Structure formats: structure tokens, C-alpha cells
Image 1 (cartoon, rainbow, N blue to C red):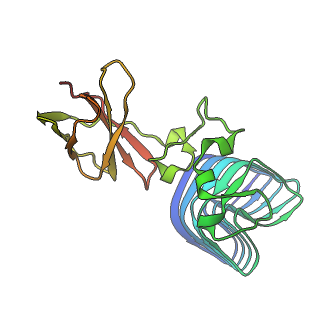
Image 2: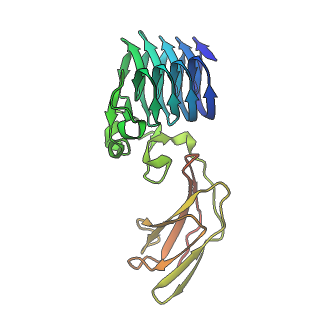
Image 3: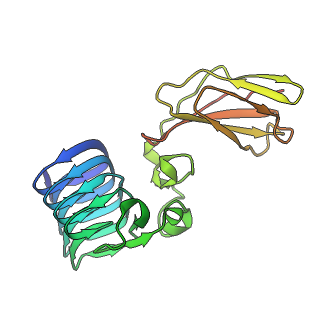
Length: 261
């Protein structure tokens, strides 16, 4: 598929895509089109012009988008875009999936002809690529540090970042779905504490926050894969809430019940 003078925005694709020429996770060919706030995961396999998000962009704009897809191609292979041509504009984007190709292979962009690329990054460790036709290569520790993305919008917010969601990489605020686990219960025996709550469908784990003041700051206490946690009372914290999360879907599910002692 392709986009010609059109708009694709607020899209999420999780699929395995296989093609020959001009293959991408969201779109094959972007010609003078606008792609905004889109993300892909899964795998993209092609021959010429293969990218995690877009296979080939000629003119047009891709902004505030990212790909975690595994990308495999032959010529012009990139974690985000396979090939880009002036006057294409690519800004505020990143990729972190593994990238494999034979000719013109890059962590973010495989092959570029004078496009305008700014504030874009790729993970040199997870991609297995130390170079790219555009963007800046960063270590995983830098890719999971908000300071790396200094020009990005984390205040409105368009982007969010949290060490427990999306592997610690930036994700979109619209990817969060709020859900309220019920029946958070607590039992204390001496210095030991047991917390239980109703399981959340789709959650891959739970993060527990605690405070010694119900109106004060809550700090992370522990993480667990089950809807139960046992341990010692941490720093006299007897007020708790639980956040359920899904690392694969990058969604968070927040509890609405504090357990008070």
C-alpha cells in the first residue's frame, strides 16, 4: 500500500509483513503524504526499500513516530525507513528493532538522498547497526533516557516515558488505556505484609507504589507478575496503590483503590 498526498495518523500496526519492492510496517510508499504518531511492531521482510514503518518516502513528512519491528531486506533496509528522497522530512522519530540487510543498511534509514532528518534516533545495540543514512545512534541506556529526546513533546504530553512501560522507550500518550483493578486488600502480621487484588485481563505485570502519608508522594515498592505480593513493610509505608501494565501492548492499567492501615 502507499499514501499519495494523504494523511495517516494515530496508527498502530502489529503484524508480520512480507514483500519484494517497497515494503513497510505501516505503508510501502509515502509520496508527499503525512504520517504522524504511528508505531509498528512485529516483523517486516522485503528485498528493495524495506523499513519498519515505511519502505520508501519521496517528499512528504514523517513525524513523531517509531518502530520496534524486526526488519530484514536486501538493498535499502532501515529500522524506520528503507529509502528516503528529497524533499522528504523526517523528524522526532526512532527505531529499536533488529535490522539486517546486504546493501545500504542502516539502524534508522537504509539509504537517503538529501532528506531533511532531525531529532531522530536508533538503538545501536538492539538494532545491531552502528551506522545509518540519517539520525543519531544511541546506546540503550540513552534511548531510555528522556534527556536524549530534549526537543520532543513530553509536556502536553504527546510522548511519555517510563522504565516499566514499552521497555523503557518513549511511547505515545494515546497508547495508554486506563483500567481500574478492584478489591485491593492488605493483611499485616508484624513486619510482614500481604497485598492482593483482582487480576487484570491483558496485564503482563503489576507495579506497587507505597507511602507513609495518604496525601503524600507514593514511591515504587515492588513489581510482580501475579496479582499478589508479599514482603516486609517498606519504610513504614502503609498506604498503597497498584498499577497493572502490559509491556507488549505498551498500555497501563491504574488502580483506583488505596489499601489503608
